[in-house]
Image (cartoon, rainbow, N blue to C red):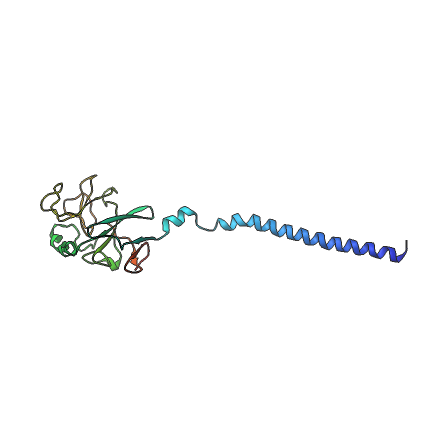
Length: 200
């Protein structure tokens, strides 16, 4: 066999070897990427974890005086109430009947540590869980509600064990609940949009 016949055969082998090496490397890289995807994905929080921590956005533009909407944040019901000016003005009148009128023992962000327990006086945002045993207080916003008596100023009533809260979520003396309804972190993006789960 002459030298000229051997040379082309060696070139074919080298080219084939380069092609096979490149194909094997590419296949290996794709395999590593597919194997790594579930591992990398496991670092991300689950849908459940994200849902537990995600802020909740609520449009309050259509909420009229005396109305309430219920939202959900971290699997907790949140009451958003638009109070009338007269209801806000009447809040100090029941201070003497409350366990914690200044909310010094209760849970709320610093920006809601005021008489109205809110950023905007007319909008109340509370975690709708009774601080006694976790039932859902019901709305009884009309003063003098027949079910609660002529001296009822308006607020929330827990049907499980009879705890009463005013329209700032403050608990009345004589109720089984010892603390006011908790205020969640929240802020207003604009006049129409409330975000629960993000501090102001």
